[in-house]
Amino acid sequence: MATWGAVRATQDIDFLADSDPSPLKELRLRDRLKKYIEQQGGRAEWLVGGHDDPIPLLLRIGFSPNQGTVAADILWAHKRWQRDALQRAIAVDVAGDQVPVLHPEDLILMKLEAGGPQDLLDVQELLSVSPPQLDVTRLKESAKRLRLGKVLGECLRAARK
Image (cartoon, rainbow, N blue to C red; front, side, top):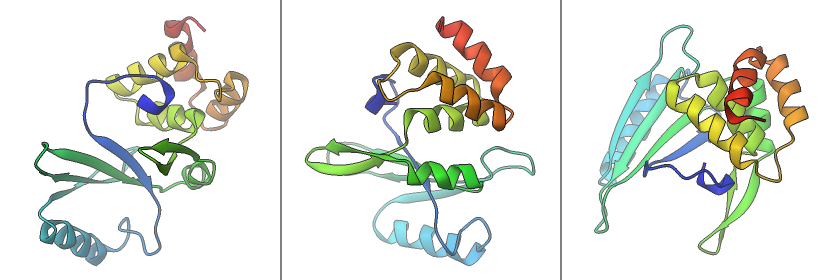
């Protein structure tokens, strides 16, 4: 969100990941990842969504360095368009390092699919700040293809776009 000009009060970082094998299907991998994070002094909690949950699996991690708690949520790509979004990520400079960040259109689609109240407010904020990389026409086409066109239309009206 912050990369694209939308400031939020939360201090966590969200990641979209893809791996083979995937913890979506490999329960032992979940256990190994949790154990590894805990061995590094962190906390790890797997959150498993229901059958039709747009986020079927999330790993919530936290570390407490000297400066305070650092928290992250890691979601695993489970649809082709999400894997494609990882390929479209844009590298941004963060303290001298190049970090891949979801294209604003893909971030909006992820949030539309999640569909929670804060997610939809985030979409409205992103549409309001309108990063230069955002192509609203292409976003509308993608949202329609993913059956998210109606909710995008509502967010566009709320953002007055």
